Amino acid sequence: MTRFIFITGGVVSSLGKGLSAAALGALLQARGFSVRLRKLDPYLNVDPGTMSPYQHGEVYVTDDGAETDLDLGHYERFTGVASRRTDNVTTGQIYQEVLAKERRGDYLGATVQVIPHVTDAIKEFIQRDPDDVDFMICEIGGTVGDIESLPFLEAIRQLGNELGRERVLFVHLTLMPYIPSAGELKTKPTQHSVKELLGVGIQPAVLLCRCDRPIPSDARRKIALFCNIREEAVISALDARTIYEVPLRYHEAGFDEQVCRYFGIEQPQPPELGRWHHIVDRVLEPEGEVTIAVAGKYTGLLDAYKSLTEALAHGGIANNARVKLKWIESEVLEGEDPVVYLDGCHGILVPGGFGERGAEGKILAARFARERGVPYFGICFGMQMAVIEAARNLAGLSAANSTEFGQADEPVVGMLTEWTRGNVRETRGMGDNLGGTMRLGAYPCDLEADSRVHYIYGEDRISERHRHRYEVNVNYKDRLEEAGLLFSGMSPDGELPEIVELPDHPWYLGVQFHPELKSKPFAPHPLFESFIAAAVQQSRMI
Ligand code: GLN
Image 1 (cartoon, rainbow, N blue to C red):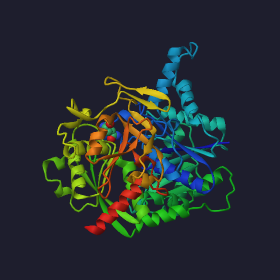
Image 2: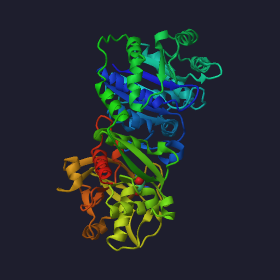
Image 3: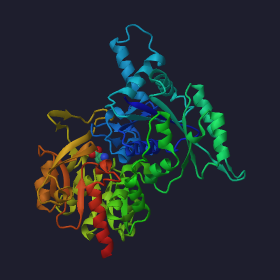
Image 4: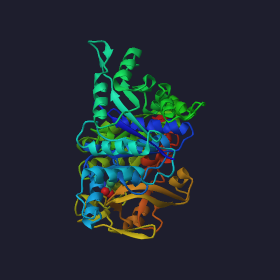
């Protein structure tokens, strides 16, 4: 019997609901329970795939090819449970479903309304393929009081009523600001936020209060009294030194204990948190330090590179080194000698990206790394730029370019219109909709024996997640290999180049997929582990 835990947020956004949900998932796992995590997003976009990274941060891609909210990345990193398409829903998707049913005539002449039709669709989503896990943790995006979240709150209220308190818990995350002139943490915003929730019929049983200092007992009593919550269930959610400390902090504050208590679950043994202690120790007190230059396009909003930043940190955990990141808007490399920005860095990474702006700067970064023997890691767009660089400067194809930027005389990167997924042929065209039409999700890749990447993975065939429209053009494979760029990973049918490397370089790899999406603090991705190891080597040489 699956129990449902709904996490709502109040007062302000950006309090870290996603992390709270992920940390609770980790704590329940550490107590021996199975969990899944889901996110309900109240905006009207069908998925975040078409939103600018500045609007929404990273788009997190699942194995089954869904473009989802970046909180799903937190869920996977904290619990190791692979997310699926059914773990993220938006108002846009719900309406799309309801309207398609209406057009088919499935409502048999009824007037289609928010209650019950939209709320039914939301409830159905929440309960879809639960896999018999012990706990389904659902985060509701947005802040209580937003017009957009009302149908979601109504749906979870109904579920609470239908399934009963034995199976449904409401957790509310709020802010307790410290007001220096009064010298206290203020409870009023929390009281108002809970009142707002009560107004739509939801009584939270656990309150997580974000605060920068412990809540004094009189303030806790006051909240308990006004919000109708047991005093022990008012949990201090203190700022943590690293996100991986959040499960430990929550446990100390009694979060998992209160959840078990609410459901009447006897748990005499404390959870097994050894691995989280180990991770936090490594993050806070590593022995070495390396600097990695990241030449990207959205460096003004680091949420756009959430999984990447975490995966690099995981590489640091594996090598007992702190990974300092030097963010570089790649466009600046075009105006000045890249040495100004890149000299002294122990590794250079060019991440995924879209569009022409800054592309030449990324090509210069790849060239700098190649010529100077600095470890280079190109991810997706970063691989494509490395291939263009090698084509121009190693193979002598000076007109090499990507058709993403327009007509190219030597289209070493181009749009593929047909490819195979399993036994199915997938297609796309120039004029397709932008939403959901890239090569998305997990694809297998065969690794060349004796290549660096084969050595790193220790496997012949791997599976990694993709999100791109363009591909390295296989027709240039022979010419580029003759020039020294080895195509060490290919799709099983040999059509799609997935990995390139320079055998005569200390560490130079480009991958068409996004390995950062699968890295976990307790299981760092082998490519990031190896890249940081190479950077550590490099730091010893400088
Ligand atoms: N813009 C490139 C493409 O669509 C790369 C995408 C990416 O880096 N995720 O193929």
